[in-house]
Structures are given as C-alpha cells and as structure tokens.
Length: 346
Image (cartoon, rainbow, N blue to C red):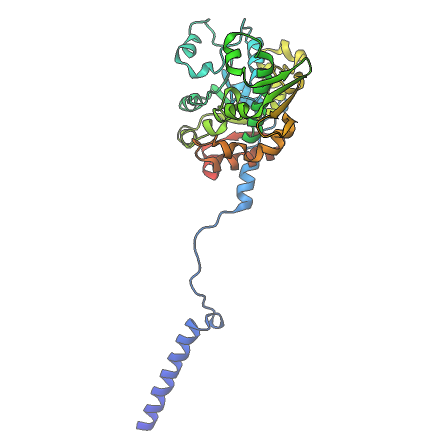
C-alpha cells in the first residue's frame, strides 16, 4: 500500500512538471501562446483610404464646386510666390473693385475693418498674401462657419524659396536705376546689366536671402506652425489646401458662382516667370569663379541653401506639413479638404 501511494505521488509530480514545462518552454504544443505586444497598430490601408477620401475634384459640378456654391465669403490666402498676384488680380476683377488691396492686407486690423464700410455687401472673394510674422490664417480658423470657406494655396518651400530668389533678382535688375531707396539698397548688388542680361554679386544676394528679403520670407514654415494646426483641430473651419499649380481651375470655379462674365477671360495671370525675359547671372568676383546663370546657381545651392542660412529657424510641426504635402500632391487635382481628423492623422 505504501509503495502504491509513493508511486501515485511520483506520477502526480511528474504530470505537474510536464504541464508547467509545456506552458513555459513549449507553449505551442499545448495550444498556449506567450503574451504578445498588444499595442494597436495603425492600419496603413485605412489611413490611405481616409486620405484619398479628402481629395477634392476641381471640375465643375463636383465636390469643390459644391463647397464654393455654399460659401458667402471665400478667403483665398497664400505665401509669397504661390500664385498670389494672379489671384489678387482675379479677385479685384471678380469683385468689380477699382484697385488691388495692399500686400498682406488681411494681417492689418484697420484694413480688415474697412470691409465693413466699403458697401452694403462685403466682397465675396477675399484674396491676400500672408506675412511672415502674421497670424491671419489662425485668426480665420477661429471663426468657423458654413457660410465661409478658407482656401490656402500651398507651394513646396524649397521650390518657393528658389522662386523668391529669382523674383528678388528680377526686381534688382529693374529697380537699381530707380528711386534713391533702391539705389542705396542694391547699388553694390548689380555688377553689370544691359537690355538682355543682368549680373548680380553673389555675396550681396546671399546676404539678402539670409535676411529673408522680400519674397524669400513668409513661406509655409512661418504659416503652418503647431499653433495653426492646433487651432484647426479645435475649431474645424471649412478649409481646403490647394497646390498653386491649380489656381486656373480655382478661378473657373469662383467665376462660375461670383462673376460668370469673366469665364471667357480666364485664366488671369500676373507676375509669372514666363513674363520675365532678362537672363540673370550670379558673379563671384572675390573668389575668381566668374559668373554662372542664376538657374544653375540655384540648382547647385538649392538643397542646402535654407539650412546654411538657417531660414527655417522658427518653424514647428514640419512633420505635419510634410505628411500634408504627401496627401495633397497625391490627389488627382491636388486639392485637399483639411479636417481635425486629417491633422490628427498627420
């Protein structure tokens, strides 16, 4: 009897040992599994579907057309060198105004309030550049309404800066012989020029770029900051981002609802690169490197230009802007409806 009990005890111990070993050493054999990482993983396909669902069709009688039709006021804003001059001219003619408003007027309280006194009906299309240190886009986003539509015209920043440099060069070559202010500002910058060519001192131009002179300043790093993205998330305005290359289609949609008499005159273009005929060169006399076309200079320096001069020192939330650009440029018409959910996804 005692031997039988001892045998049963040994069998029981052996069974328990086998059971525990099967759990901790060979979990698969008995159908058990060790604890796995339970952190929820983002469904990339779902995110991609959500992004594509925010794309807008810019053709007539499509999604963007409906947004424009419902809006009493359409605010079109943009950084420098993103089609703003063309849109300002379009807005002037569409609103039957006599003059274009001041550059960046939407940043000035007194000029904004003038909209209330000009006539009984406020202009339906309000177009303005955004200034580097302003917060007009944030202010607009704080007043969401079904009767207003915000359209931000976007341009990739490196490309925009290069265009700004070309604009400054063109301005130098035209204005150096002008009024005293420009003579003093540019007298050491323009080395030589004639009817077809203009040679600019490299060092002087780099100094102006570093100071974010004129069109070089006021890009998306100054505008699309964390504070702006947070404001959109908190207030959910009707907001559309549009690639600057699509402003011809935007003009057609706006004209359809607010000035159909302009449809046969579209697109309205102003201050575009194709209109500038003079060839510009950069000259480095101090190092004896001679002259090179401005296009070639920007092609060579462009990738490091902003970094070397620390142009984006005040930027924030650039990751969100990069993700936004990925979605915007992937849209067939490069138009994107921006919502709090969009920004959360970015």
